[in-house]
Length: 153
Image 1 (cartoon, rainbow, N blue to C red):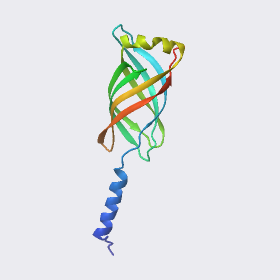
Image 2: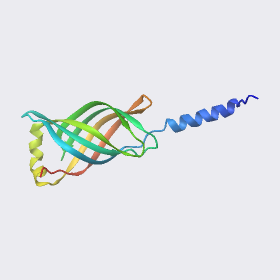
Image 3: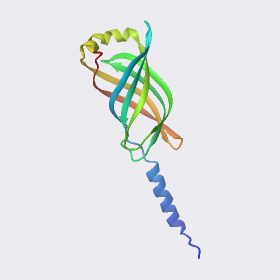
Image 4: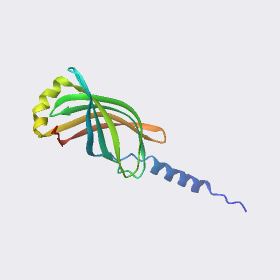
């Protein structure tokens, strides 16, 4: 005996699957940074690598395809980061994002004293990230602002 399902039942199942799988993802939560390293030092510009720790509060995994971000410290432009990735972001877990910033050195000196003293600085990051699931990507704006303890010693 062959079982068949009514078209109404199949339509409801398909609609439920589409509604739950195409939900707008919640924002990723910034947790910490680690492994701050100076990759290249120059008078005009330098390159810094850092591992950013984030948490994915979503019930589903995501993929990070690229970032295009500007970084400011105490309202002074620090540098730009544009990177292509293929990072799998697990659901409801912390993950590490390797991050490279091209630093404008003339603006670093404006913040050098506060950094050397270990003072909290105001960090602002603006730009976009491209996140997706199952090779379907969407661009999301990034507007992070917050205090961060920066210290070289």
